[in-house]
Image (tube, rainbow, N blue to C red; front, side, top):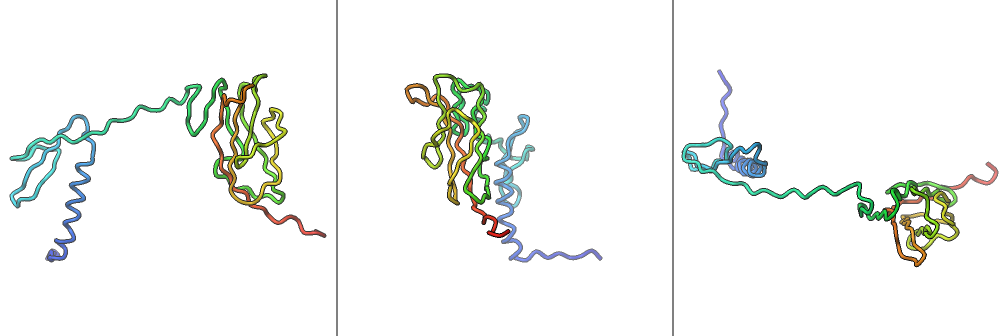
Length: 187
């Protein structure tokens, strides 16, 4: 004898949200290959949505959202992630990486920048850590920051022209620094 299922009032009440969810999901699906959507009412008076024409159903037009054009990735002056390349093909912070947590004993952080082509004679490199300029870079793209405290820091790099105007800017990098205990005396 097959199992007998009895739908209680409680089960019917809890099934209603499922019907609503199904209707919402059906309405939110894109219309594929020009297929239509139809709205009708069944014999029990329930509203039915379908991609097939039903008796006494009317076609409905679902709203569409325009798809924004893709951002151009290869433009020389793209502003992706706060970067502005200006006359340079590449300018970015390679190290530390975005969101990286560094564990050091002495507060020293190695910084590496990618710059292509090399710095123009009338340009100068400016790097800021937490808004304060780093002195003594002399155009070097590899250097060590010293004396940083534990915590979160922001590194920004930009190239300035002879008047001090920004001509290129790398995307800013946030990183975290943990100070590890140094070797104990006598170890």
